[in-house]
Length: 524
Image 1 (spheres, rainbow, N blue to C red):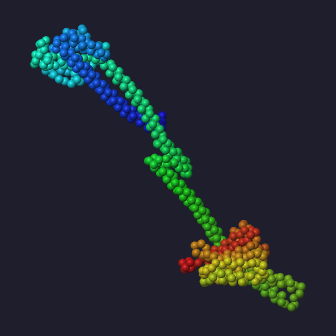
Image 2 (spheres, rainbow, N blue to C red; image 1 turned 90 degrees about the horizontal axis):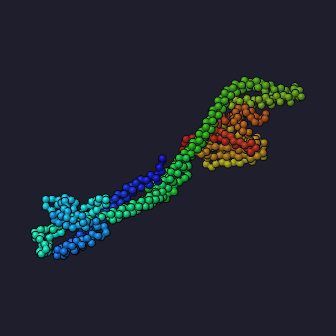
Image 3 (spheres, helix red, strand yellow; image 1 turned 60 degrees about the vertical axis):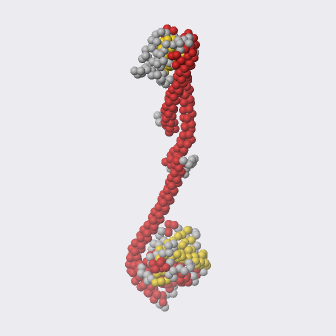
């Protein structure tokens, strides 16, 4: 059977108290027994002294009957078993027990051995040494005290006495009393002591149990409940500090540990969330880099193919255009055929423009970088397009950052990129809307950006991933699909990035990011 802490402490304390109280009671009862015995011996000795003194004058007058009568009356008191007078020769001169008068007493008997322990009898000895305890025939405990009757000058000078003056002791008065009253009193005291001890032990046990429960067990139970909650993952609970002792300090330590564990868990959760966000961001970055790599490889392969096709198509187109132009200007030409020839010339010129775009796309001319201001390039690009009919009903909003540093770039190529973005924005708005041009720093100060935002129809999400692919266009029969691909290649050759964000029905934003040189970064 498993004992709880209260039972163990109470049991241990109870055993210690029982042993301590038992030892105390044993010593106390032993002391009481000794005191009662000394008191009884003293009382009997005083009685003997009283009898000796009372019968002194009768003995001087040799009035033995009167002396024996007084002894008999004294022996009739309660508790006195018998009184006897013994001569120095050991003869019982008188006794309240008549049948032993005239008999001799053995000097080795208990009544004589306190004086006859050596070769010569002792003249004086203490009352305790003159006492003896023995058992009667019926088993009752008895106490006997012998009192010496000494030879005084009056005794040896009296006419009736024949004692020599050299004799020191004339006889012994032996008084035997019952110890039943003392035993009864001792037993009563022992029983009361046991009863009081049991009651005291009970009260002490209850008090200790209450004290243990109040001061030790209850705080420990609170601590146990708290540790079980901690084991279950509940870090919001705390222990109520009820005292300033060691248990209170332990409870405070548990609360401090709980707070530290809660902070550690919050830090771990925050670290996990941060790590998850960083992993997600890194994954998205890797996907973007992979998409750019795939697009670059695709552009490179398509560029080689396009260069070959454009070279092969360019020569026949040149012949067709030359001869169609000659025929058109020939006065012998039937006027009814002239519109058809003009269509041939116009479409041939269109094909030549496409071939030129293909050649430009395939060449990827290395940029000739020089310091330039992004604001200036944007203004020049705007001046080239805003006079077109397409931009007459479009509001231009400029949001240029102040003190924007210069970048190393090819002026013409960057201008070509912005012109392409501006024209695409105007076409997306169908000539009506608001065009916003914004510049600024990216966080970290290593790059600057220019954003072109329109309020046009937007680009569907499924087209955004293909918007920079060659020959991909959302303009029905109006575009070659090479403008954004060419712009992508130019910005990539400058070490920058071009991105797009669009919401169908709300508009599209193209953002061009150009890196600053190390010197510019240090200055910034």
